[in-house]
Length: 165
Image 1 (tube, helix red, strand yellow):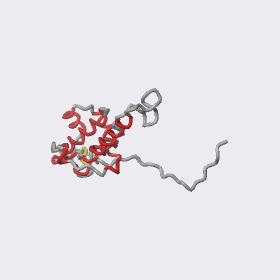
Image 2 (cartoon, helix red, strand yellow):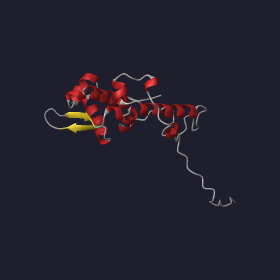
Image 3 (cartoon, one colour):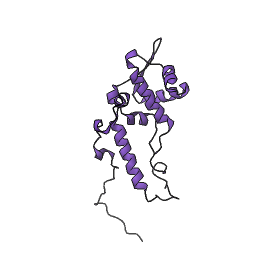
Image 4 (cartoon, helix red, strand yellow):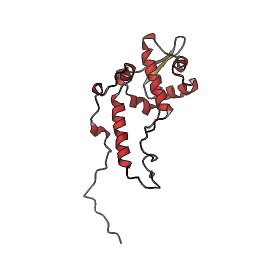
């Protein structure tokens, strides 16, 4: 499984923001200092988080960032998706090119299913769960598995097929 620093840093910054919520808006410089993340990198991440509606900015003296929604309503998967950071469990690029010399390897479906389970878990884990260190499996309510199954195209049996010559 691969999750690059972009997703990890975005989640860390959101948890930091949540921990500091009582003190009002939080500056990126303060997050940078506490989390050891470059300020310019945080600026890029927070632009995307703001565009996704996960954070709001407050201008002026005493300004900074706030969570746009309660931390109990923001999933880790929301944050990862906001910064365009997919969790990769297969070697395929965008699920199109093969991972084994142009063909899918024998274990492709295993890793693809694992990826679906990872997203199911990350969708169930909120920023509050992470902040409160309340991540034991008995506290996490996983979403309906049908929401994570691949969408298949319905087959139209009424369409005539022209004979191949």
